[in-house]
Image (cartoon, rainbow, N blue to C red; front, side, top):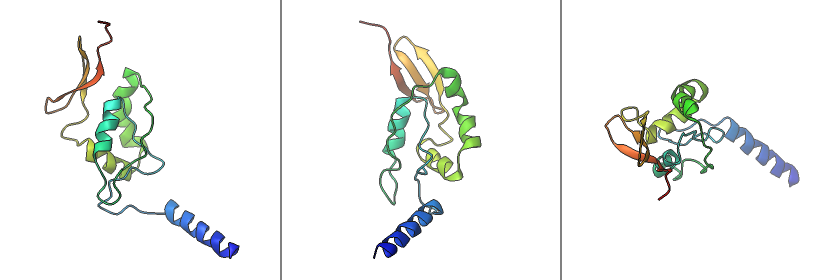
Amino acid sequence: MRTLERRIERAELAATTQSRFPAECLCFPEKEQPVVGFPIELEIAAQVKRPLHGDRFVRPFFINRSKWLRQKLESFRRTHYSEQYLKAWRAGFPDHLWPAKEEQTPEGLFLILKDRTKLLATGSLRSC
């Protein structure tokens, strides 16, 4: 019985490591979770649900990134991530809106989308 269980476990492991994503799947690959510049981008990505499975990724904790690195994320995505990652990314961040430009105001840092929508990325750092 144990031999059969081990063989099933090995077969399941092999199937998950070699699996192909269905055409309609918008999942982020297990080892390629979303990399974002601001927490609001994680919220946007989480709002898009997978038609097959529901949540598209395990919500990672946010790692603050400096401005110079945020500016390089778009080109980094194109060169360092799989086609499935890019497909999942575009589901929440379509090319006709993203990448956003950053705009610092007294009220805080905003992300300005290509259609001129403003999203508050970080609030004001001034104390009241």
